[in-house]
Length: 351
Image 1 (cartoon, rainbow, N blue to C red):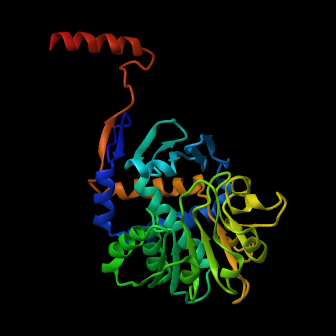
Image 2 (cartoon, rainbow, N blue to C red; image 1 turned 60 degrees about the horizontal axis):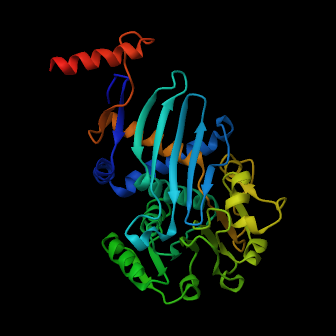
Image 3 (cartoon, rainbow, N blue to C red; image 1 turned 90 degrees about the vertical axis):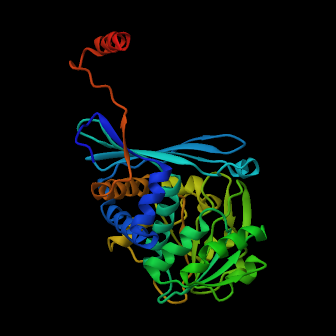
């Protein structure tokens, strides 16, 4: 990477794909997961605030900032479920990592692909602490853009090798199954969510509609299952019947954000939940018994994006998959920005 602080390394979508494929999808996910877990274990160092959201009837645009005192990171991300009707992505994102001491950015990257990877890696890291022992079968309800990443992360980190897929759009299930066919999964395509959850150790819900939905009813969830609720991630958008929440032990990233955006927005504000960092540092218990229902109420938090950007920056130390952007002004005299502009005009005329 460049040592010129006025040039900012930038990872484009093309280079992100090249980097992931060069490292390997599963090694990339396991490496990323390690950074996510490491940062959860130093949770108390981070500035923490719920994401700054601008909501509209069509979707949401959000900024997700945090800092550990040495580095500062933020992500811009949108969520527009109807985009697929016009051939656009539901979620797009980019992010920046900067040094706190100077304020200079040290990395800029696409984060549409990177967010899909970090969301899946986070789910699998959490499942290490909450899923039943020796879990091998996962139901994935909602076979959109996140589904294959979830499957690969759970395979890489937990050894899950049996998938039960379900989506209201059968073509989405067909695509998901086809994309995953070469990775050695045993895959069953299910006609309903009820069929999909039968015999599953882990249930992942990853639907996209921005509304209160009931993807899982109370009678569909049995003793000992772990629910990885990924799709409910903004106000008014949920996937689980409230009765499931009352039966489960609930684990969250950052309660002030999750109570606004997660499944627990259906519950009283003082309803007890456990923070993941406490589980990962041994301050709180994860799964307590084989019959316990555990629920990861996943909404995504800024520290996870920070971890992803930090992991990415370290990979670029030995990777050619980036370009340097001339993003920051570099006047000969720091106070003479106007003079820099004039000299550029003179040089252009001379050329």
